[in-house]
Image 1 (spheres, rainbow, N blue to C red):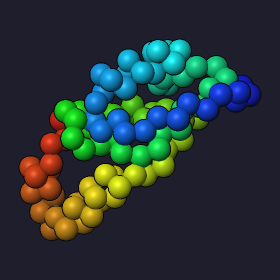
Image 2: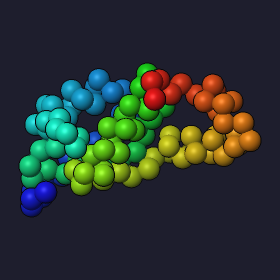
Image 3: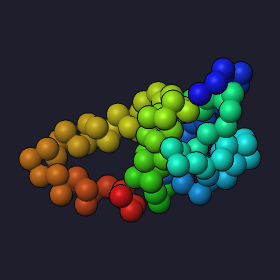
Image 4: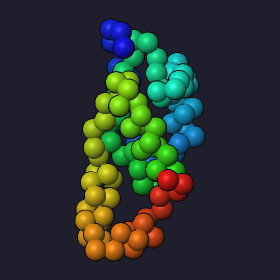
Length: 106
């Protein structure tokens, strides 16, 4: 990755994969083998990636690939923390947690 000249701040995705992909494309990002990237840009996800929308699992995978490739940073939001809390409360029965949450395709 080259020098960063732009930080693209993205928040409140709420599991809306199609909207996130459209936003990334409008910002000039292109999907490559390692994930979405744009030279000179770093996406900064500021939380609330999951919950509400139909594809939280896919959103998390997309963002994780970008973070792993050095194309993004992520700050955990209250919706992610709520899921961690809920998962902890279901640690003896993970299936109950999965059934209680709408993960969309994982």
